Length: 278
Image (cartoon, rainbow, N blue to C red; front, side):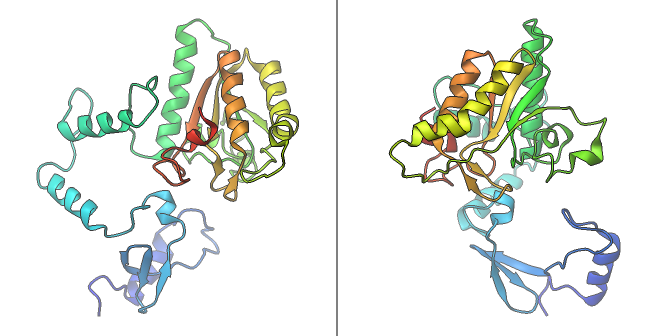
């Protein structure tokens, strides 16, 4: 028997006492007992293996049990597993931020470290609100985003997720009432000769109208770069993102690009926004 193989007692405890995400507690989805993971595969207790097409919710694009990453983690944990970052710094964090910033455009020159995608979006939204408030733009308290988006499960992040898929109706009176534009229609691989004109007409115009009508209230625009992950892996045309940035600059609105699912090479470029030349 495998060291990590689950017993029937384990599975019964799991079903009775553990709430898994994104399932019903009354009629929960089936769970798959995993004993190990290697490369792109999850190995189940019954000896079968399955491809993890979600890469553990976008987290392991280098594969499970990667020897280089394992060695780095073991080396680090033998020195210190974790220290709080308030008032403290250390070389691994400095080296990481130095490397990250070297890969970004020159005008992105600071980093703030967060512990999850949801929290990173929450922090970015709070920073946008504080930025405008400190400059005296006290009416800029809302965010503009597009439908079919997903940005995490923290309260701020949920407020800019698709209102239907994220069940905004369950949190009426608690979630901020943000502004939603329809999801872009023109896809990434559209081969029409007049593709930019199509994007302008079908996607940019409705977005620009919302910005024009509400820019005095909009603190930031929150979007996934190029690919809407949980919204169905919808790849929209890069020209739309290019024009969104131009509109944000025109109306003094901060642009928050969520690259949790697409950054670090997962779209063929290091960052998704690079497809738009932004």
